[in-house]
Image (tube, rainbow, N blue to C red; front, side, top):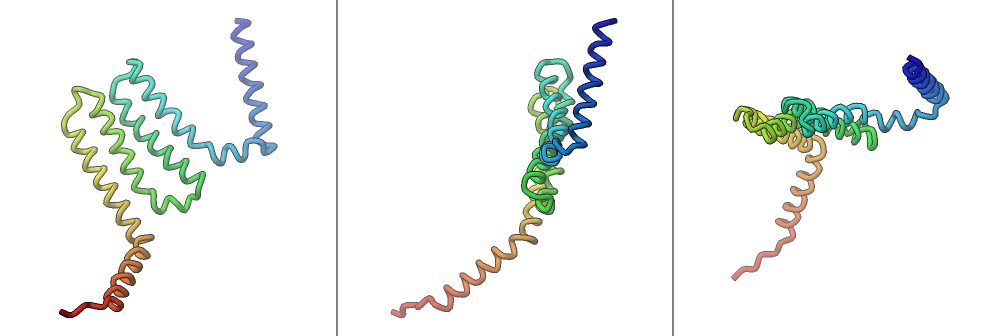
Length: 160
């Protein structure tokens, strides 16, 4: 009972120190940038528990989703949340990753799992392409049109 009381007391002191340092602003930057670790950790834990044969292969689906989403969140916290205007199809792709991992590592997974993963990956790719086309792609199209028009204007054809 004494060891248990000592451990609980240590945990309470550690939580109090963390709260105090947080209120003093020590963890402000770290929390702003590294909070996606709390999304990444369960995803990696699902993978570790599956590969150590503790949990069944079904945990790979939420594991893949959480890992992929945490990558998206890391990109947004590091660069800017404006990036979400371009990265939102990644949430569809995250489900495709989870389903594909399940299909890949479970010998008894239904074939529909693979088909669903491919369909979701294609939908995600199409959405990402459309997002890029309607936001940044218009500049590329304008540049191509200018170059083609300039080539047609300044190209001197040789007549035989």
